[in-house]
Image 1 (cartoon, rainbow, N blue to C red):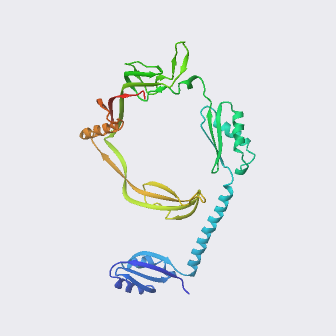
Image 2: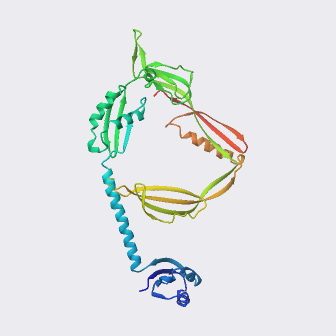
Image 3: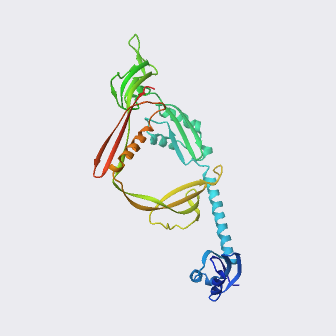
Length: 372
């Protein structure tokens, strides 16, 4: 029995075209679903030349599917092969899920992370989850490192998660609760509630400067720690800039796109749909992943690759002709930094030009409480 190939074609005046077609090759089981859509079978030996023949009679190929026992058998084998691969990977995943693969540490500031990881690794008798005594590890870590005030160890997934709190240090860390300026500005008014002032009215401060220290000096001349509180108002300068090019080359999307999909088990590709050849010379890729399994029993995920065609364009845009619009764009970039109901005290901008490139810096001055 000859193997058959199923062909679906589209086009007008199909009777005339099909009459020409049967003179060149044999067709079987002809069906007309619509006036412009036909379905028929041909011998598989003619599948190499079918595209050329159909094109010559004025029709368009919608789809070509191979029929027969061999092809059905091949599809079944392929399907069972995929199922077998998933089953093997599932068994491997279930086995390796009983082991801790990673040690993660959080909360460290002064102690070297790799040092603690090495210490924990040496004190693990086994990587099997049910062989790890988390309470014993907590005690060992606290005994080994005096600077750690508290520690907790837990197994999360396949990670050994260690959270630590380091003891309070002296020196610079005594100022860690001080009120710090988040802006550059000029101090205009101060209302100290508690703490020790580090600035005065009329002083210019920079972002990161200390405004109020977290202590007071009592009547005995002793320094006592206290949570600083104050209202400190300053004229701060909100600024941003925009760059304009009189001539520039940009890449824009044409609207054409090409999509490819993969089914992955961890990083192993078990199924793919779509050609790996990208039909565009220039493109922009957007990649998205969706996990298909629930409760992380089997880490299957679908990965979509969407390629957007790009076209290169040259743009000539004279600055002087668009000056007002460009300055307004710079202003809008700064306005987003304003707080609700905040009043603008002053606005100004500067323009610097060099070689067809204009930099517009826009500055807005407001009075804001920076002591909160």
